[in-house]
Amino acid sequence: MSFRNYSIALSLMIALVLQITPMPAIVDLYRPDWVMLVLSYWVLALPNRANVGVALVAGLFLDILVGTSMGVHSFALCLTTYVLAANYQRLRNYSVWQQSIVIGLLNALYNLVIFWLLHLLTDIYFLFDYLWPVASAMVIWPWLFWLLRRIRRQLRLH
Image 1 (cartoon, helix red, strand yellow):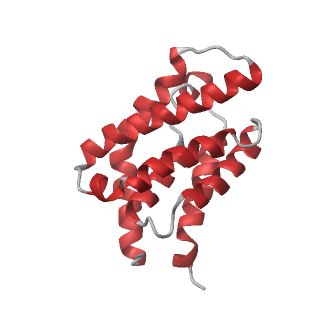
Image 2: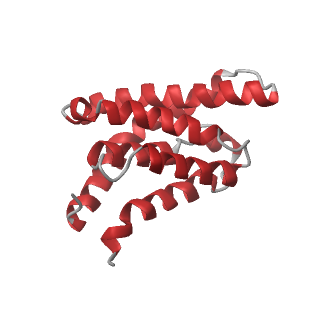
Image 3: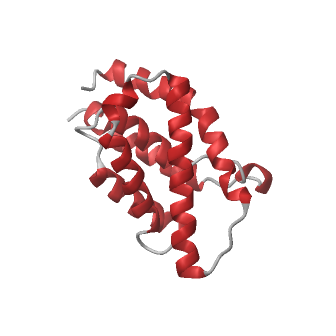
C-alpha cells in the first residue's frame, strides 16, 4: 500500500484540520467549508472513489470535531455530494470559473441545510454572516482545484 491509496483520505483529514483550526473571530467569519470543497473536488474528479458514503463518514467526523448534533454535517454533505455526483459529467466540462459559481451555489445549499437543521434542533436564528463562507469558497475553488488536480496527476490517480 502506497501513499496514493490514501491520498483522498489524507486530503479530507487535512480539510478537517483546516475546518477546526482556531482563527481570529474576524477571519473565522469568512472560513470556507474545507471539507465540502475538498470532497467536491474528489467527487468531480474521481466519482468512483469519492461518493455519498465518503461524504457520510467525513460528515460524521466533522460533527464530532465541531460538536454539533450527530448527523447535521453528514446530511448536508451527503445532499451536496449527491447533487454533484448526479451531475459530475456535465460539471466537469465547465470552466473552473463556472465550476466556482456552481460550487458557490452548492456551498450555499450546504450552509442553508446546516442552518435549517440547527434551527430545528437548537433554535438559532439566521444571520447573513452565515453566507460569507460561500463567497470565500468561490474565491478559493480555482486554487484548490489546481492544487488537488496537480496532486492527482502526480500520483496518477484514476
